[in-house]
Length: 317
Image 1 (cartoon, rainbow, N blue to C red):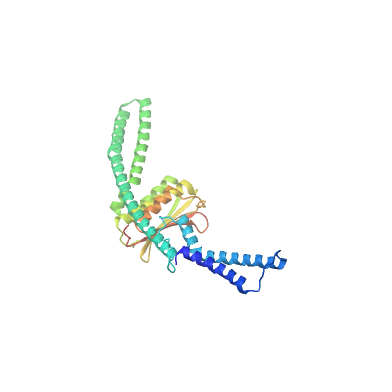
Image 2: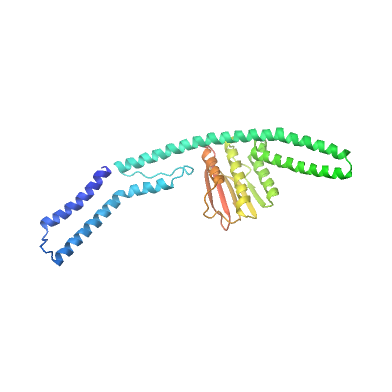
């Protein structure tokens, strides 16, 4: 039954019941209207309105659920669906909406995959140019400054040596940027070594204590999945350094049944009710790329806990 005929039928039932009461019930209306007759009529009207409202409420509940889902649905959290019950226009509408969500999720996953692959390609290109052009130029400047300092007199030699230290510090910063843009250790030594290097550099750069727990017998993962795990770990540490006001960070990577789980927790001020920024949205995009689940919650005591659950056999977008 369509929604139109359902509402029409509900009203017809209420009005038919009222007509039957007027025809066969011992109820009369005099002129002028007596007090008892007015009480009966007003009471009957109230009963009809309440019955009509209740029946309409029951009939329109599925539309209310659909409206709430429409206002809260997030394509970065796939799998949100409404159960389809019965038949008719409302059931068809819910089925169509569920099918639209599924299609949009697939299209979002495909477009996100293309964007992330293009982003990684661009990062590699920029890192290569920084390494080959800027890095080599600064190395040449260091050599020139060293020769000049060796031949200069004492007052000028000190200034040239200061320039050497500034240049050397800038070269170290360029190399650090290159490592962030292109984790070469991930390609050469694998995920565990890359995460170890990442956390060591993070602890050295920020002064925070970092505890690591990495299972040695992790299953084999494809390169895209390892890169997603590394990037999520990298972004989570960046968020801790910028926003958490923490003293300690714990990172673990372990096997759990048919999944690989990355956990990053801190003892900072917690995530609260703040809106998700570009960093967290980017992590959700990466998780969607490999069919993973990303959860960000409050830690057991204080701070924030991030968990990335990655299937061993990832779903193709």
